[in-house]
Length: 89
Image (cartoon, rainbow, N blue to C red; front, side):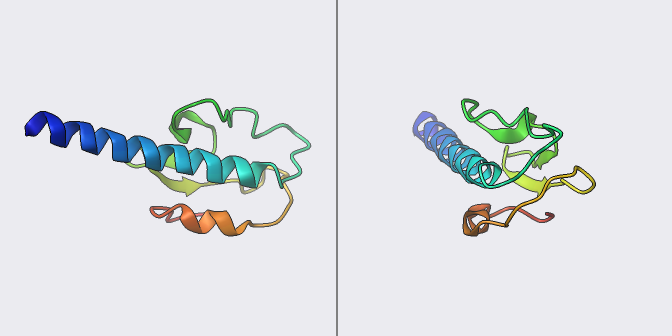
């Protein structure tokens, strides 16, 4: 039973992390980034916790995206609402 529970928790964290990657890449695709600040935002990674300007909690879930003074422009996208643990943008 414990092994099943552990597998279920890992699967949930992986799915959430992939959703967060999808959300952030969808947003990145709408942004103008003349200084290539978002070059570390790699959609092939399992989670965005290693990306610059992204901070995650101990469960590898995005809690902060800090792009202040980065020279980036563009819209906020509705998908950002799917970042359920986001506390700072």
